[in-house]
Image (cartoon, rainbow, N blue to C red; front, top):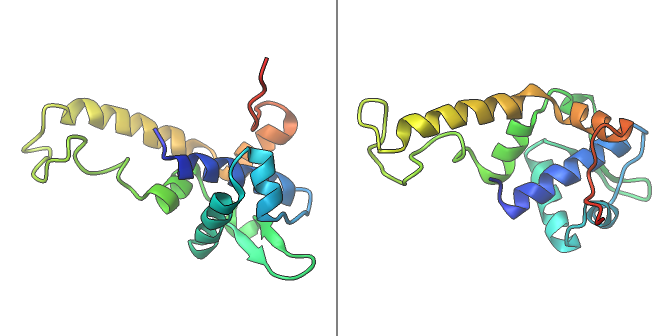
Length: 146
């Protein structure tokens, strides 16, 4: 459903939020290790998310990436749009230029139902709330091999 960049970005931002809740800033290397993602790719994604104001960063010895009060209302939808754009939420799923309510493609009405559900899911909780669920043990961020 999401690009690899978006998957890494979601995990990274939830990890950054979980650390920010403890008052800790984290580097790209630490973040990449905790979310099982390549460090250079993670660093690139995080810099883009800073530019788009999804997270913050501070330079220097006590610096790193963080999430703060200015990021509290951001949802998964905001993060997905920041990384992958809004293509998941708009445009024709078959790539037609003229697809609309009045001129629908064969998938238009069914995809519209799916998109409505996806938007609802992605806007239901903030990124901070997702991090709180990880911190409480309600959900996990890492995959554990059994």
